[in-house]
Image 1 (cartoon, rainbow, N blue to C red):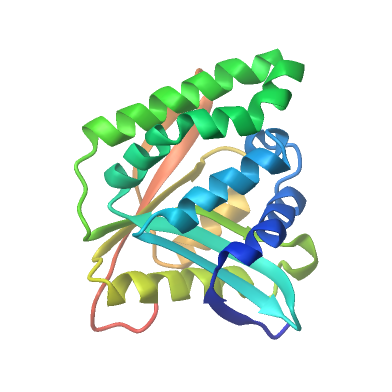
Image 2 (image 1 turned 180 degrees about the vertical axis):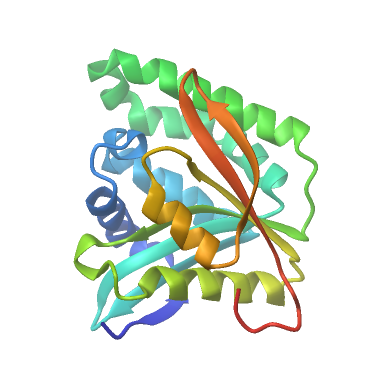
Length: 209
């Protein structure tokens, strides 16, 4: 499927939220509800060093990638917005008490990221990559990652990282490895969820990752 990649704008938020829900049914962020997701991605767009791109065809959003330079500064912004995020998720948290523990854990992780990880404008992170199920397998994810790397490179970034599940996630792990990302760490997120942290070092001589 032919698609074009462009920078996301606020008017894309509803389509971004719907794409996320379709791509990740039953996942924690999806279970937090559309209102939370809208505020969550709005923070990406409001962050001055954010990189949010969408893939579209004939006016239909087929996928998106959301990330940022200087991760520590981004997580500090997330911390500053914890109350608006909490309000956006209040109804869901009220109905699903078990989600409160997960939300509190994520808040502590954000606080840890913002206080212990020294990063600069030369570092960038991919926070989310989503492709609508109807468009998966058509190379959209690859194009989004390539364009993300190109934007990051144009801003002076020389390193991109991301995290993804280590177990039961073979196709995603294989995808990032094909894109040139390398595992630099494996850690536990919560009591049992094992995660890989990937890194890609940008070669300014290259045109694609």
